[in-house]
Length: 483
Ligand code: ARG
Image 1 (cartoon, rainbow, N blue to C red):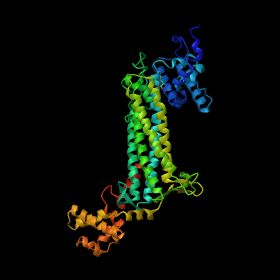
Image 2 (cartoon, rainbow, N blue to C red; image 1 turned 90 degrees about the vertical axis):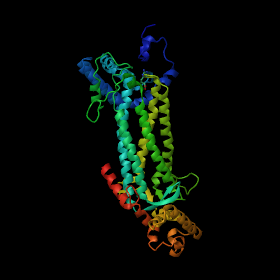
Image 3 (cartoon, rainbow, N blue to C red; image 1 turned 90 degrees about the horizontal axis):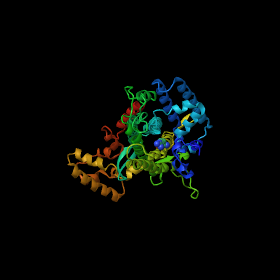
Image 4 (tube, helix red, strand yellow; image 1 turned 180 degrees about the vertical axis):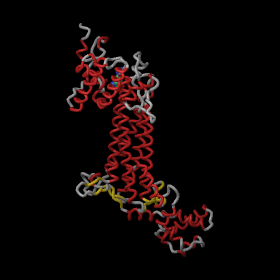
């Protein structure tokens, strides 16, 4: 038996093995059909590594040039779709390296000097995720801008604010939307932070213990843009940790999950608001679907799906945490399972953010040149709902406090007034002055000012409150911040 018989089957570690891998095991262990998505990062990492190998005189200038030429050819092939991905070659790394060697011979075999797939894959995932974080950050800015635009159009629209989903106090619809801007702004902050810890270089850790070649890891980090705000190279400082931990992926998934939870809460509200029972908004037809049996139906599928997909992103976070929890140092093959959940998290988050900015902010109609909003508002329905729920009861209590009543007593007095209003099926503001005065003789005509929805809204004029002046101030702040 010739010692290299498995070389023909493209097994990188053939000499030691006395039988080939079964087809089932090959399929079970291969990752190329999903990790080929890392190809650009893999090539970037290899180019940086090769450049450093040459600078350190570990490979010759000629080999370096061959590697550059070969990797450029491979990039072209992958882009053109002509690259032959082989299951036999297990993963993206071995596929590209084998093709490189086929193209440029021994120089290709020298590329892996001082490197292992363990530090290679950790580097690739970090590089790839860094790029994706940047895209997600842009999308988060777009979504915030859409929300701010829509909020600005509806600063004066009054809706019932809820606690326990019971009408509580009137709020500006613009103010309500800006609550989500705050959430997405924090999501962006979290991602900026995750990016910092993702952007560190594992390469040079080799298999687990470092390498005997005189590598310049800082040089590779700088080449790959893995630098901090001061331009200092960011390199993983412990080889065992570098190849084995995936906490950056877990952190990203946690940040993505929180962001999806925010989207999901917003979705839930859109779904409620669009229902006939609320009737607060309509969602443009392009974001809804009909029913195959009930002709009258228009369903808010997009928010419903987003709410559903939140479960899947949170599930991926649980998957990654569980993947990591029992692993001893250093690299274990378990880690190959980090990719699909991470990829799906990124895809789901990006699609969701994109669709929500379009739905909230509208889309430019190229025919009319006008931005057509995806969400239409029914201000009358919102006001009607606020009036039905005695939303200004707190204002009446505050009014009595200003007349000198202790708050607890005022609270009790107003409860009686609300009871009377319910009995007469009218709003508090519709009770005649004489009736109100039965509850407290100090009540005067000016009470009607604070019993009106608008009066109540204008009163809440503290920083972060719902008074239109405050809401406009916040809109200005967001505009400055978002650029
Ligand atoms: N495909 C592997 C992964 O995703 C690459 C690293 C494999 N390393 C190893 N020693 N088998 O993790």
